[in-house]
Amino acid sequence: MSEGPRIFVASRNAKKIEEMERILAPLVPGVSVVGLEDVAFYAEPVEDAPTFEGNALLKARAGFLATGLPSVADDSGVCVDALNGMPGVLSARWSGRPKSDDRNNQLLLDQLADVPDARRTAHFACAVAFVHGGADGERSVVVEGRMDGRVIREVRGGGGFGYDVLFEADDAPGRTTAE
Image (cartoon, rainbow, N blue to C red; front, side, top):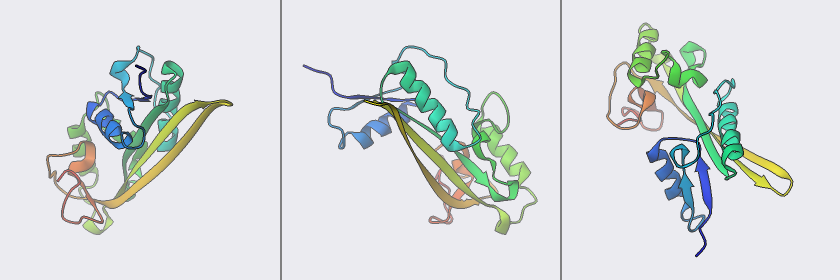
């Protein structure tokens, strides 16, 4: 019995890996999605690109080179207009090391404390990169998405992670993405 196709997701997040397998299952019958915990250790790249696309590609390429498997990686964050697009690509480490969602959220609230509600506009940005081999070498594709909204004044909701407790999408006013 042969093993089905395998795809590598450059993540340790079990929920992200399960979600990718759920998304791909109807498109790629028998697919198995593996993450960083399922492959031999390799040095993960420093996310030092100035764009979400660049960071996603760094991670997907490193995964492909280390595993030889078709590889997917993402980078995402919140971009606040009143902060000139920050924290942006620095979203996960906005408040320093070690990474902390609670500290990041408090820092964002502190930085926007005097900003009127009408100027608290923001958007979530996400880039997903897919890198695989072809007869003529490496191939890659990146897709990007954006969700417009605003940053509220207090933490609300128990779902999601990161800034989800502070972000209301324009298409769901009154509810944070964590709600």
